Amino acid sequence: MKIIRDNYGYINSILVLILLIPIILLMLLSISQNEILVNNSVDIFEGNVLSTKTNDFINQINIISMESMHNLSYKSVYDGVVISNSSRQLKMCIQDAVNNLSVDYQHKGLHVDCRIINVVASTNPFEYNVYYRINSSVINDSSNKKVSQKGCMNVSIVNSEYPVYDPYPLFNARVHISGNEYVYDSIEDDLSNAYDGADSGLIIKKCVYDDYTLHGHSNNSIGDCLENHYYHLSHDGLCIFCRLENRSSCIHNGLETFVVSHVHSNQSVVSADHVLFNTTGNQYLGDVIVINNSSFIYLDNGHRSKYGL
Image (cartoon, rainbow, N blue to C red; front, side, top):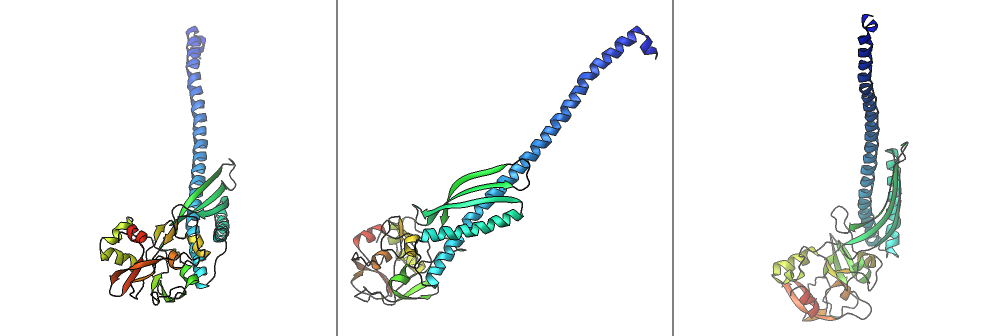
């Protein structure tokens, strides 16, 4: 108590108290800031979880879309049915699968409302566009954080895991399937019978020769293309939706592949599938291109120029 009785002691005590006040305030401020940082860290973590899971869901839409097109084209070929309004049918297939996926994510703690707005042909005929809208939130999250977005994804029709089948020859010729090929018994408008026993691809595969004129550089190039039954971009060809619907013309950028003949003739109907199968009187003749002793295609000047032949 001696320090208190000393006048100087009173002064020293007051000075100590004055010095302690800012220290105490700093400690309280530090605790408050730490609480804010913790809360912010929790919010950031929850936000990152929501964003990551939502992106995972969107990636699944792409896979679902490829699988749905695979299933629809398989049904068309192996049930022998024309798919009317195929883009709408595909949209419904994708939506059903997305709804099932939403249930799975709900069990993982994420509420997802995803709507497939539209499915349309792309400017790239080896893809199609899926437009979607998604709203997602973490279940039982007090912060009520949400992700809402619209988007469009380009879905490839060239995928070894989900191959897309081409039903177009099935609807326009008498064919049977052998492995991954159509073998032609006959084509009704083939008066020269040049396509009896011909073959073409069952599965859509993109040609590896992006510069189409490279086909004419050697018999190996064109031979490889025809052996693998590759498909090519064609403004006069049919997109995958028009093939499923068995249309004779297409307003979109389309595809063409060749029906490979094993009968030699000087001339016959051009081997591009959209020309050979055209039932509107727009078939035209082409000269023979000899690939080897047993394989031939028939091309007009326009197709010869396009493929460097």
